[in-house]
Length: 74
Image (cartoon, rainbow, N blue to C red; front, side, top):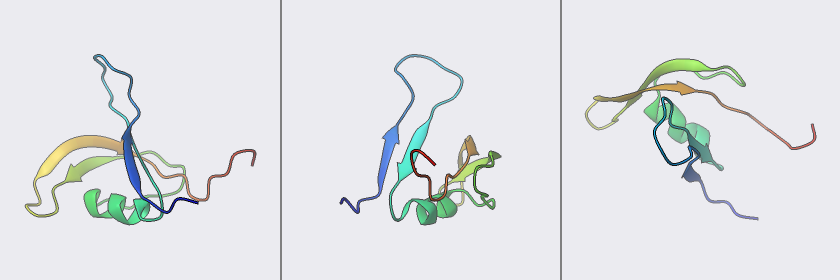
């Protein structure tokens, strides 16, 4: 089985109010916690900002959630 952590654009092409990026894999939560300084909670949508860790500059407004231990059919 693959062990890579990936980021994938999940928004269809065109204009829209919300862009969706899916981050998955073993290191996904650790990466998300570095970019998004607010505490995340399983299956809860949290408003905040993505931050450049080298400059502490706000990059964009985001809504972020995690789905911990998600399995199809459960």
